[in-house]
Each structure stands twice: as C-alpha cells, then as structure tokens.
Length: 311
Image (cartoon, rainbow, N blue to C red; front, side):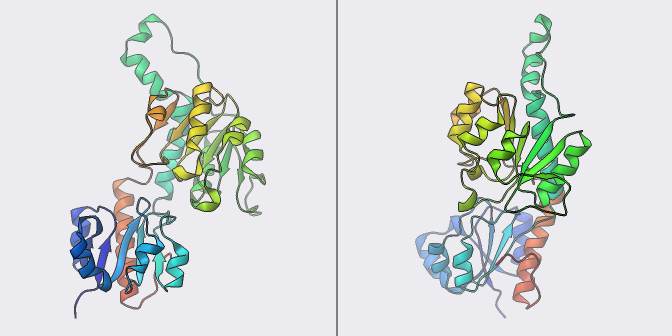
C-alpha cells in the first residue's frame, strides 16, 4: 500500500522529516515549483503546519484530498478553521507539552523588563559602572499582574507570579469561577488596575489589536507589557509610541506583528526586551511536540482517535 501524501508547510529538522518519511510521502511546500505543485496537490491527504504558516481557504481549496492538518504548536490561528470544517478536515494541535516553557519565558521577560536586566548588562559591558551606580529599577514583590487570557499558559504564569509575591488578576471571554483571581470584564479595566500586563490569549480576528492605545494609557508610566501569545494582539505602532514617550515603562516581547522582520523602531528602543518567538523552543518541548504531531497523523490514518482535535 502506498504511503499517504503529506505536505510540510514549515521547515522541520531532518531527523523529524526522516521519522515522517517512514509513514508518509513527504513534500516541502516552499520547495515546490508550479509543475510539482500541480502534480502532487490533488493527492495530498495530510499536512504539518505551525504558527508561522498560513493555511487559507484558498490553499485548502487546492487540496481536494486533504483530510488532516497536524499543527506543531499550541496556536492554530493560521489555519482557516471554518474552511477546514466545511471540507471535513481534522485539525489538531500540540498543547500542554509547551505550557511550562512558555510560562517560564513569560516570567523571564517580565523580570528582565522590570529589573532592566538587558540595559544593566550593557551598562556593565560599557564600563559605565566605574562612573556610578546603575539607576534603581522596579520590583515584582507586592505588585499586581494582569493576565489577558487565563488558559493553560495564563494559569501557569499565575502560579509562578504568586511565588514572586505578585497578586494576580485576569480578563478573558468569561469569568472562571473556579479560579481565585480577580476578574475584570475588559482589557482596559484590567490594565487600569494592575502594574504589569501579560498577554497569553489566543490569536485571531476577535483579539486582533486588543492591546491598543487606550489599554497602554491605562497601564501607565510604571507599567510593563509582556507578550508571549501572538504579535497580532498588540497594536505595535501604539506600543512603540508608548515606549518612546514613556507612557509605559518597558515591554518584553517574544512575538511580533511581522515575524521575523521586527521593526527597526522597536529594535532601537532601549526599554524593550526582544526574543525571537522562542518561548516553546526548548529541546525537550520541541521533541515532545514533534512526537505528538506524528501521533496525531498516524492515529488519523489508522482510524484511531486523534489527540487534541480542535476542528
């Protein structure tokens, strides 16, 4: 029996491609020319995607045999779920395995931004310590953290934040009565009542640009914004203005509106800590996610239940 044809939408480690090739006839989307695409597109039955790949309705319409999209990562906002449902395509992601690593980096960014670790590092390297002490920084203990989106990652950050002496509040689609944290019914109200704001909500049209000028204004000149969710959730131009004008103190960002082309304006600001969408990029987590991607695919084609099906 021939292997199902599998389309790889994102670059993958050679070791993982070899594992996939044991079960599937693999094709790298970005390496196909027009003639090759026309030859394989009618027979593609599976797909491996990720947060940085866009699986649109137009693309899905060119793949009449597509049955399964296995997403490498938590976020699946790049996949047109409505189009997938309309075409009876199973979509699954890889949650849980990356939760702790993402929460760890969120706290790292918060600590670095509040304590100005990157600026202090430059200060020492430039020999400025010999001319005087580094300016005093903010602190975490006794402050208030607001979490936008109290899902798996938000809850993991909340538990870490409490260990640092922060009180926690949150906003989301609805109040979670089982959680002990204070709930606010809007992002603006949350920002007004906290010192630091963490974004861990899902991407998509409903949350696009939700961290806007008004939210940043309410966060205030001592406020810090951390985003480990999606760049689309933050109005980046408004954030740059707020950082430049001192209307918020600092930011820690792992995601951006136009990755990997981070704007020059953002890169030039001294009061922002930037990381390259690496929150889940630890060896253990990536290996676990790849194994889950493979399991989701093989389960589907063997007629077994798929883990973490989202559509």
